[in-house]
Amino acid sequence: MTDGLFVKVASTVKQVRYIFVTGGVASSLGKGVSIASIGALLEARGFSVTIQKMDPYLNIDPGTMSPFQHGEVYVTQDGAETDLDLGYYERFTSAKLSRENSVTTGQIYYTVIERERRGEYLGRTVQVIPHITNEIKNRILSLKRSNPEVDFILVEIGGTVGDIESVPFLEAIRQFRLDVGTENTMYIHLTLVPTITIGGEIKTKPTQHSVKELLKQGIQPDMLICRSTNYLSEEVKEKISLFCNVKKERVISAPDIEHTIYEIPLIFHREHLDDEIIRYFRLEEKSPLFLETMNPMLSKWETVVEHFKKPKGMVKIALVGKYMQLADAYRSLFEALQHGGIANQVRVEMIKLDSEQLTSENAHELLGEADGILVPGGFGERGILGKIIAIRYAREKKIPYFGICLGMQTAVIEFAQNVAGLRGANSTEFETECEHPVISLMEEQLSVTSKGGTMRLGAYPCLVKPHSLLEEAYQKREIYERHRHRYEFNNRYRSLLEGMGLVVSGTSPDSGLVEAIELPRHIHPWFVAVQFHPEFNSRPLDPHPLFVKFIEMAKKKNRSEW
Image 1 (tube, rainbow, N blue to C red):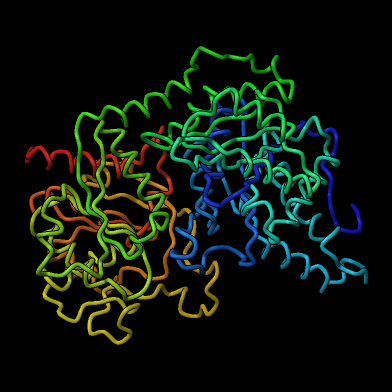
Image 2 (cartoon, rainbow, N blue to C red):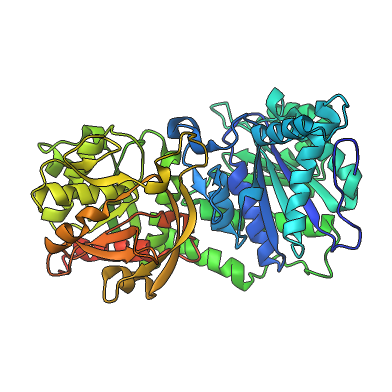
């Protein structure tokens, strides 16, 4: 233990290798997908991995941030509200992530200040170095302490090299190499190699400047992943290698993808990225190099990509949401729908509709071509009427319907208003004194005043009703799904609505919380809505059963099979 409370891992513990991924030139180059793809390749080589995201913003977590600012809030099994990149990490690998895998500047400073207030620094001056940097290093080492058998810890440093917010993180990972050894650490820098002339000439100068910025922080990258329009030529790789002091074999092309992000592990493999990591850490004996042959795990990725390239059909899914202007606001949802398409060997075309623009007059025009309608989660009153209109259209026209979180709550409201005849039915989130609060604030939320991390978060059990559509999809009687909500089905109206035909097909073990509702098969071919977020548990290699079933029913509707 040192002045900064940095705790080193005992030398007797199994040696782990650390890979740090930084980004340069511009934001949104795809660090999250890149590091997730590296994790997928290492798993294909037989190694176990975990991945950590370090975000430079001062928020404690993204839970209170607007989707327009930050994209979706991804929820882990243990209830952490995290950056959407953790969704990529879980979709591409088998790693089980927790709140330890998500770190922000706000968390770091909060922890250090709390320690100072408790007197743990013994009156010393608290500074960025060593106290902040040591806490950053402790967060990295915490993954080793909680995952003692892991082979690789991959760490993504958010932001762009040169940003002032990222400096403490870069300094911490510079020091980290001194702590655990050069042979156990690798720096990978993701950068941009643009094509800016009509003739298609590639420019390497931005990458050179980005590496120089990294060198100013004392970090020499061991590998470069170069985002570009096309594969880099050997000549361009040689030039980048020469000016950036990186072996040519470790200058990796990351060209624009043609079909799907799930091509990226295969692209990196063709560029021998995984072979070069194995060589760097001298692990050839544990994982022999394979330059041409495809192992079983990579064959699965090849199959996924093949389904995108050569689908056997197409379905149109209308998504009626509040944040459609920003694709990342529903990133896990979009991916889960594609996973359902993979399982059914069809291409999923998404009709993205802003619920504020949907009216009774234009509903048929906007929804008439849809093979399925999905209403996702969200917060606040804006756009609610449009969602209710979309749900009514799906119910009356017998179009497969899938509601998630707020999509379940609005389905209950629509049923109560238009089937049960409760004209004043609403949620107390939108109308505090409504006549029929069929959706109301959860009892444990009544005394909550702080917004961050106070919702019902993380995985909870749900008991599935026998012979229901839910059981048909899951093939299980008990499931665990992730939640993120404050409002719930009001059980005072349960008997009334069930008497009118609504089926409660999923409940918490004590039956206190309605987790899922549906309509009977003789009324509607497939109408299912759930309070939880199944999209967080969907993977391209293991699609979520509800999305598989939803796309299957949309496929039947498309082919007029009912």
